Image (cartoon, rainbow, N blue to C red):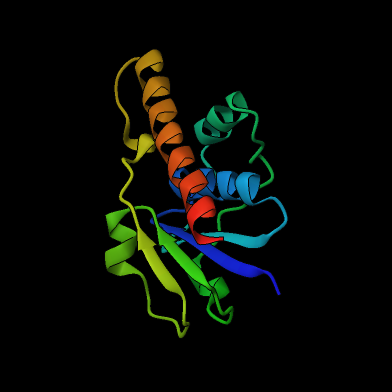
Length: 138
């Protein structure tokens, strides 16, 4: 049986979507990957664009609420922002929980170039985290 991973964020629009994309990329078909938010904000277009620059297509992803997955027994839950970690509703699971607070690129300010740079920086941090996670945990 494949292991199940849930990536949890505030709005399931940027960081969790990027992490879902990279976890799928690095794990291939070894695991089932889900992402959700404690709210749903839709998938951020800059997140899609930033991932496309690195050859990962997340344009088909959807923004989901964590309540949609309350009946799934996850093996791992990864929170990618402090807000999700602190406000995640409890659901019965024996999952091992991991946490890393990534800066929210959707809150980036500045010129288009500066905003794109911030998205790229966060994407690269999440990529490294996801590759290490898959190598260490699977």
